[in-house]
Image (spheres, rainbow, N blue to C red):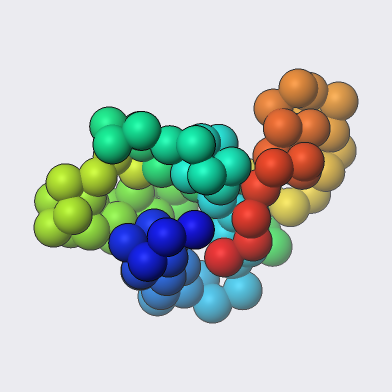
Length: 105
């Protein structure tokens, strides 16, 4: 990752940690692979130790909104419980893509 990418990734992790210090944050997609274009979004997966409700997902999204405005970057966020991720999603191509190319923040 270049310096700008590292800085924004660090800020994403900090923002998520302010909501849940135990959340696992994974950057995947073109930013993680290192082949992002200038207009590429940031693909972020957040995994929690508890079931995710609409209110919880909204809290994470709302907390990242100021970072989006400040940086002008688009953050694409998915939030799942670790249990849901490892049971329901483990057979999907999405799971395998994140597992193979994701970077833990």
